[in-house]
Image (spheres, each protein chain N blue to C red):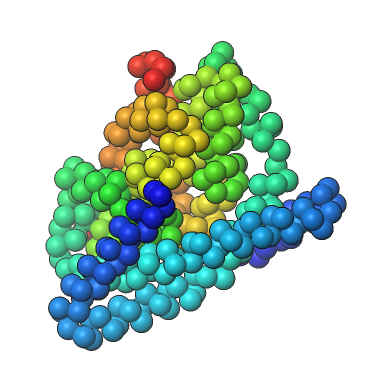
Length: 167
Length: 165
């Protein structure tokens, strides 16, 4: 947090020296609007994560997303990440909740990677209008196998890095 | 419009899950509401710093530096540059995708731009620190980022094999 605060302070100073107080204020108003816009979604994400942690049965999650869930667990994680609505403020609390209720690193990695690469939220809101339909669909098609591969690699490395944590 | 759809899906899911929690009993609903609100209160100051700060960080890093080295003849070196640039790109979704779009228009190679967009989506440094670490165990975040490193290269390789969109 401190590192980031310093980084931000330095950047503000640089913007001030280059563009004066107007430049600083312009960015500030823009970012404040953005901040106000996402706050409700942050709240929704936190509530979603808390509900999931509370109502998902732990044994079931660790069976279908745990270290022994095999390829099926990775596929479930991938599918879940792809359909999860919202931005980082939803995906990360939910992923964190999954970890606490018994999903392993592999399945959670598959979920997070799938959300970043093939989640429709960001693609529809930002990538389609900016990069165009052809590029976006083509990029998503290429990305399809990646979450499962990343999850499998994660699981493979994790078991070897922390042998005691594995069952 | 699409933002509205996302909001509706998001809050719809919250309501549905809240209803399920309510059926399990009021105590379950209450404790998860309290848990979720506490998370929210803890996270807001970090997000404030992240969102408001990222505009300034993005403003001081010139986009030309990032788009310069991604031409179609740049090959694997271009892909490597793209991956590093993707990891270093600050700012929100607009910045990453816009740089990708500029690179495409300025004659960047498609595999390089794919590698750039995917590296940026997977492990943009600023997002790891500002978004992912506040919400998740740091150990998981670094582990996931490390495991993700090969995949922009894999995607670029697939893009080279199957050709343009």
